[in-house]
Length: 317
Ligand code: GLV
Ligand code: GLV
Image (cartoon, rainbow, N blue to C red; front, side, top):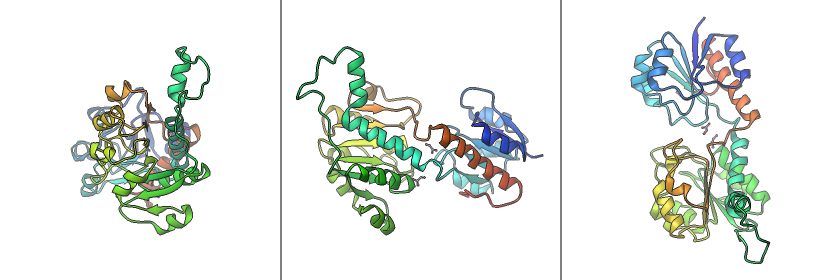
């Protein structure tokens, strides 16, 4: 039987499916494996089942020459050098679709929390700061009638837009290309990046990390936003320049932010930790029992298809 290394425990549904088709080793360590550990444990393996915290590049692939497939347990794949995999004829897959609604839910949670100051209010209440409701107490921003600007209208961005419409929001978006189907379904309008920045009350970042999106939200971008704007990121951390976000929040360029992803995960910029008007979530976008189980089955189906000589359903290269 072919060998599969699973670099960190995933839900049992996926492991069972893998065991029906391969000799499976699941890392027993309750932490991310280093590149060196993946190389050592991956010797003789045909498949690496990886987490988005595992960096997979050409050097690593050369050190485990039996590996023919990298099955990523994530929709994002910026942790994998696809070109390096392609050059070595290593197949790469991801887990799209099954985490769309789940990640959209968390995005709405961050929008609502940052706009209505839920986490900040929780901290205040716990620290004895609630001395009675009064007319000017902890005022936030209402969402009804406001404009949501989505940066990256893919599957997740559209799922965010559908939910935001139920809150009475108008939808604009910026992608490299307009998407007329989405325009019709969501009554959404494509705008330039500049217009997205200057006309959105809430900006939701739902783009993947690419050379086009890396660092797109810098001080100049925050400076073009409305002073009351709320920025939420459930895409990838490095799309925002975190020091610039801290500057923008400190200087009142924008009102608040909600983050699920960070520039240098799992580290969180200490300047953001010190601010009350930013909600910090520890990368929970896909973290529901339902979603993680569905991701486990999907990643396993990709592996079993590959081992059976079939085309894996979610092949990237
Ligand atoms: C989560 O961030 C993922 O890409 O699956
Ligand atoms: C991810 O699934 C996306 O397309 O947004």
